[in-house]
Length: 165
Image (tube, rainbow, N blue to C red):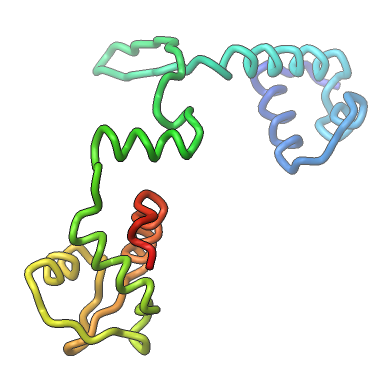
C-alpha cells in the first residue's frame, strides 16, 4: 500500500461512510485500500473534529490577500429547535403575517398550484407585486402559485398557523 496523507485518507473515508452503512475499520481499509493504522488514525481525527465542531463553527473569510480564520460558538438561530426558531422569527422580525402571505396561503388552500386549477381573483396592486416577484402566475383573470409561491405559502402556514382555515 502507498503512503497516503491524512487529509486524503479522511476524504476517502468520509466518501465511503456517506452511504449510511455500518463498517469496521478492516472493511474501510479494504474498500479505500488504506493501511489499517491510517484508517484508525483518520477516524480518531474525524471523531475529534466532530466533537469540537458540535458546538463551534469555523469562519473562513478571504479578504484580498489575507484570509481570516475564527472559531466561534454556534449560537445562531439555525442551531435551535424549529419551534424555537419560529417563535424567535415571529417575536423579533415578523409578528404577524402580511397581506401577501395571506394571498399565497389562500391560493394554496384553494388548490391553485397549476394553470388548470387557477382561481379567479380581482386584480390588485398586491397581486401584481406577487406576479412580478414570480410567486403568482396570472392566466387571464385567474391566478395560481408558482413553485416558489407554493414553497413560500407552505412556509407562511408553518410560521403562522392562524392562516390555516
